[in-house]
Amino acid sequence: MEIKTTETGDVNVIEVAGHLDTNTSPDAESAINTLIDSGAQKVLINFAALEYISSAGLRVLLATAKKLKASGGDLKICSLNDTVQEVFDISGFSSILTVSKDQEEALASF
Amino acid sequence: MIRELSRNRLIWDALILALIVVSCLLVSYQFAFSQAKALDGFQLIYLIDLFFLVDIGLNFITTYRERGVEVFDKRQCSRRYGRRMLVVDVIASVPFDLIAWVLIGNGHVLGGSLVLALRLLRLLRIVRLFVILRRWEAFSWSNPAVLRVVKYFVSILLLIHWLACFWFYSSLASGFPADSWVVRAGIQGADAISQYIRSLYWTITTMTTVGYGDITPGRTVEYVLAGIIMLMGASLYAFIIGSIASLLNSINAAKNRHWERIESVTEFLRDQEVPADLNSEVRNFYEHIWERYRGVDRNRMLDDLPPPLRLKVLLHLTEEIRQTVPLFRHASGLLRDALLTSLESRTYTPGSIIAHEGDRGKSIFFIAEGSVEIISAADNKSYGTMSNGDYFGFMSLTLDERRTASIKAVSYCEMLVLDRADFGRIKKEFPEFTDVLKRVSAERSEQLSELVMDGIIL
Image (cartoon, rainbow over all chains, first blue to last red; front, side):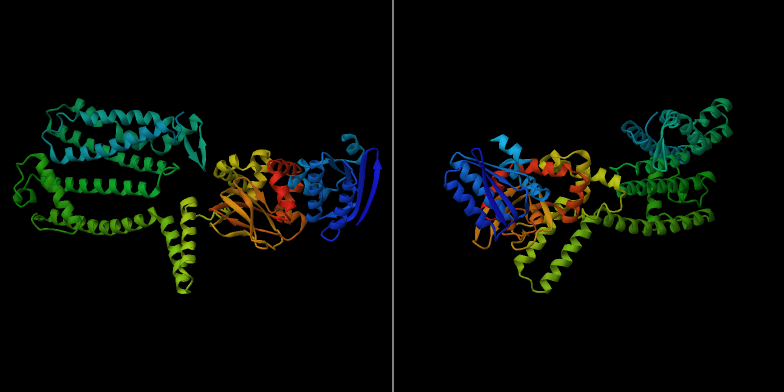
């Protein structure tokens, strides 16, 4: 798994590539937490290069959303592939997390 | 046109059925017992004739079924009736005796007996009785066993009555000779009712093989008649006993079969020294199945039906579930049909584990009725409950991960189960399926996200 963090305006964009599973989730979680702890309020996770997400990955997303919401921030997600989109839809998470088609749309929605 | 199985036709048929029995009893009674008074009174017979004449008219405009399809064409209906039943019905319904009486005159001896003989034509009405009963068999409410009882009962009643009439008539026709049974029994001068009761009594004692011997045949013709009646009685007796036995069996056939199965299973379990409470749990399960489904295996029951008919029945059977389960409420007609034909019904007893912790999901479970509890053996904790309309199993199935908790039935649970293959197929065939699931899970997304946060995958 690779994580790349960039800033576009006041939005912190996190690009996750590869597998987000039990092994890699703790790393992703700590990377995101570091970002939030450093004061990031608007976070966008771009999954364009994500190949696989496990329940552990979903947990990281939900935990992040919860944390940001508590601190008045906002988490958005974009560029899900079909499988991940389906998991989001069927589990009902697409109604909790804001999912956008691509980064542009996501940035505009903040 | 009058529909063959309509309510009004049914009421009319029931009336005609009763009139057939009454007129068959009356006509033969009158012929054998009240010769002298034959032509006075009995306006009732003519009144009944009127009903039968109306019935002929109605038969012309009553629909019929051919190869399962109801024929409404008026010409076809009347042609069919004209060819098949009209002649019999006309002979049996037109009061020829009244016509003969008017033509020949009342006082004439020959005229009197001719009129009486013509009256007997009404006995042909019995054919109509079987036609009506056959029609009733097509009613969905009609219990074939009950109809059979009616048929036996009426046939036996009429047979006994006719034989009694004939038994008396054998003496009357030869002018009551001294050795005839009527004279020997001393009822020659008695009133018609007593004569009839005696004849009936003798017929019944003879037919049921009781034969007290207080009334006996004395002349050749009586011996012959008695022999015939005895033979008929013996076979009738065997027939009745056999029929009653098979009837009693068939009335409760389904229940008997189900209980036999319960008995054999619990007997086997007892034999294998299975603990009593487990055995009674099995018994309770069967009782629940009987209460709810009359012991029918609802997944196999409809296998014989062609798919469209099967779907129709399924739609009807699941009417209530379709109202309560959100999955069906949000689905379009086509998707709903595809789901109905793919879902498998399963019943779970209280306390049983529906999905096991550690398994990889192979199916999605929809709760049609009942409530379940999410429990994790790892930390021995309950993670809440789910009930009517909720569903689970998709996380483990789509993510291909092992379940991290078990689902336990709290009450009797009726589950609709969609296996992986059908889930994939329907999802592919109906892109709206994902949207429907999305809408359904949106209603409880909070609970679902809590579960995922707690590491619970179902």
